[in-house]
Image (cartoon, rainbow, N blue to C red; front, top):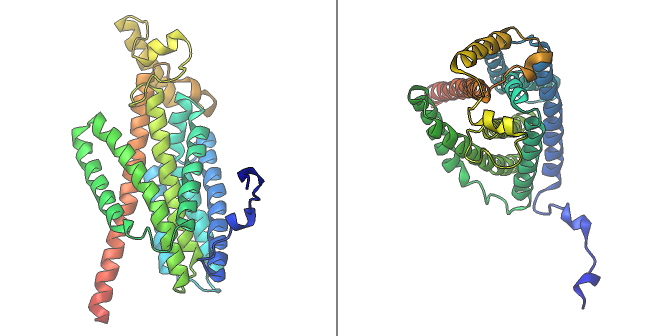
Length: 328
């Protein structure tokens, strides 16, 4: 029989026979809420980039943390469903606002970084999610211990690099974090399936797990692509970087005398501090300043994430400790 004469059953491609009908309905709610979170986060990031109304990243990070804790403390039932959906929307909006400084620096380096990173993140997320959905149940749950251990090592390396200031450690941290977050997509997807099969139908909190995975992959790709664009990443200089003058500037040769370069640097810093949003993509005339700004924005984002994870971990620890003391 000719292989080209065989018919392809496309209906079987989207059938998950190993997942019950109730769990499939639960997954539809999870991914529907996830789509809403993506839209709201994009709106928050756009508002922050265009209007510059929210310049206090630490406060918005604390606000996102507060909404997350409130979401955990509120039980999931029909009476609180609308209320918890409102908390989810607020959390997604503040998360998008926190991405604003990093997005601004990527726009100043090369605006095409943002759609490239988003498409890459969407592709990675879709591939790993489908892999978890099609795989045998509980086949990726063993990754949980390795991923949590890796996340702990990443937090420790971030604290060490705050004093060491090593570019290589910073770059290694980015790629390891990207791999760990990809693993979390596999782990969280299968964990959601197992929880739903066991009766846990809290689709709002399950959406938070996947949304945080997506945001962190997107953040890592933004920083990696931005560093490569300004000539500091491991694949810097690959591909077309524009004119010969742009190549020279990418390697630090701006073509000015030291005095003129110093004056230009001070002028650029002044313009960067005073620029309105329409000028932001044109202010950094030397990529070294863009790299400093990009690393600063990345460190601020990492610091906000570490604060969020730290406060959340402490809250869970003390909650479990008091629960153990009073119940047992």
